[in-house]
Amino acid sequence: MPLVSSHYNPPLIFKNGHLSTVYSGLFRRIKGVQQTRERIELDDGDFMDLDWSYAETASEKVVILLHGLEGNAQRPYITGSAKAFNADGIDACAVNFRGCSGETNRLFRSYHSGATEDLDAVVQHIVKNKNYSEIYIKGVSLGGNMALKYAGEARDLPPELKAVIGVSVPCDLYSSLRALLSPNNYLYAKRFKKHLVEKLYPKQKMFPNNISMKDISNIKTLKDFDDIYTSRAHGFKNAIDYYQQCSCRQFLPDIEVPTLIINAKNDSFLGEECYPVAEANKNRHLYLNLPDFGGHVGFVSPSNFYYSEKTAIKFVQDMV
Image 1 (cartoon, rainbow, N blue to C red):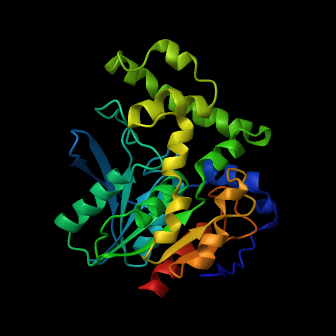
Image 2 (cartoon, one colour; image 1 turned 90 degrees about the vertical axis):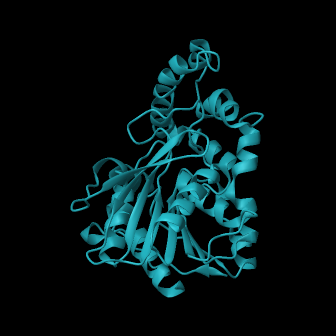
């Protein structure tokens, strides 16, 4: 499909991409979402925790929510989405990726941008054990890349899956990495690296033969983290191989379920390769919404009901 027109026009201060990103990540608060945790066991012996919230009346619809790098199911962009979907009569299953629910996961591996086997485990769990006739997936940032990769891979998607939404999606992971390592994103990259490295210390104690303290001390950048940990732990040759295999952009032409991407033009985390205009123009199932503003997951709107949340709800309503 051609580009979807956007009329998003935030208050003047939030037309600045960095301000909208920082405010939404550090200061936004969501009230009124009650979550119930469910743990699912994975085939490889690991686990993931799912945090459920529900519509006021029994629903036959559910949205699976996927967080971003070093996020969790309690981040405002997840609870804000859950609240919006719940208010629209749709239950929400907010996924905590491996090691992101407050407890270190059991294996040396954890999560990454392309770990669609974990998303598929959640989808299959819901299909087999819950009574939903309609399933939607909404992923944010890293979770958006995973959702879009999942939708475009060579697999039989369940008929219950009706729509997929990705917000602030790094469709080309290497392009996004280069953007994050640029000087204007120094503080973001430093924060991400700090949290990622902190999680390696328990891993080192659990698996001293897999990673050493010297390895950890050699991590100076996000790319170093992916070279030293992500690639080794998940079967890639190196960071570049990981980025190449897991970027969702290459999978977009094969998507056959209605799919929406919302990427702000002033998102400093995204390089130009993260805006898949050509792919959207060639695939009638793919809708691309490119607002001028919004930063990275920072689509501030009145009443704390974000543009990205409103647009996701409307997309589901229109497509189903």
